[in-house]
Picture 1 (tube, rainbow, N blue to C red):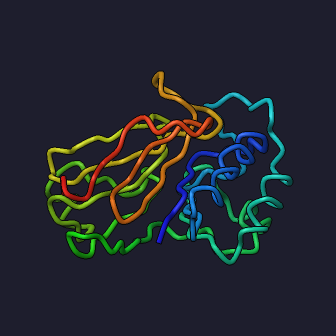
Picture 2: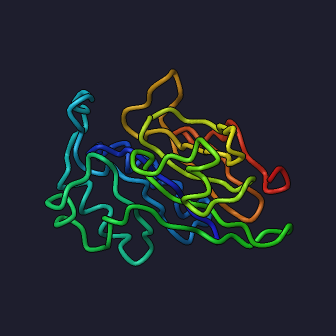
Picture 3: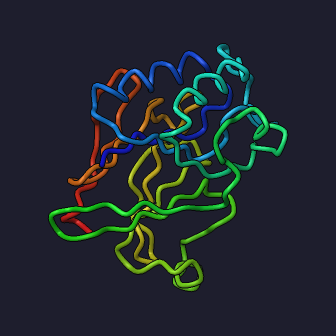
Amino acid sequence: MRYLVLSDIHGGAEELRQALSFFEPLGCDYLVLLGDLLNHGPRNRVPDSYRPPEVAAILNSYKERIIAVRGNCDSEVDGMMFEFPCNAAYGHLIISTAAGLKRVFLTHGHLHPFKSDAEREKLGLKRGEVVLSGHTHVAGIFPQESGVVNINPGSTTLPKGGTPAGFALVDESGIGLYTLSGERYTEFLWTAA
């Protein structure tokens, strides 16, 4: 299975289209959404391509292939725009790799901290497991003192911290981070876990 992972779309229709242009070419089976789908939020600028109804229509066209969690800017009224469940606080992926099955914890990042051992244990995470989260809009691979590896695809629409707008690809070899132009700029391999 291959998963295209998007986070922090914040209503940016053009950026969403650009990211989804890689869904079929990369042979993806599912689209993973890590929250903050429509609303730009009170601390963010309004994106130039801010068209929430269009974003909802685009995502609804993938409704049978979406795994989604809720972000801090997602509301119940936003959820009414979608034809797929999108209000879960967290989720999981199970990836079949050459090194065996790997579990990936999915969260937006605002409700489920995982930085300390106590927080990691409370979430049922083991040392070496991967957490995919958004929220900060800063793309990267961030090993935590708690022993989990946090991978953030960044934001498709409002990237921060000098990181590019982009997405992630999860497959049997690992997790790659890509720019919206399709350039893979870093990766986490399951052999590292």
